[in-house]
Length: 142
Image (cartoon, rainbow, N blue to C red):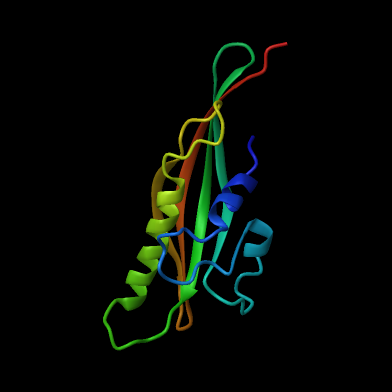
């Protein structure tokens, strides 16, 4: 088991090389549950997706934690074709750059990207999720 709070903390400040507006808020699952209630966009949520373990002998586990980074941006019609898709791509690339290969401590292997998918396209917003994986060796010897 692992807290996702450090990931929220990592994604909260705007990267120096990001030209647009950064996320108004980066938060977790409880806030995501209220995400379709007219919140100002862009926003980002870090949500635990799954955990798998492979037991290694007595007191050892190879643990894999999957988490989603959900990005929501405004979906407004413009004169330029695919402008909103390009804007979403910029956010996704910035988040991926921050996370990919990041190692929070010696027990963890660097974060890996595991694909993404659209969650919702409406006339007003776009919700996209990218999945990331963290692998950790947990030893609990008495």
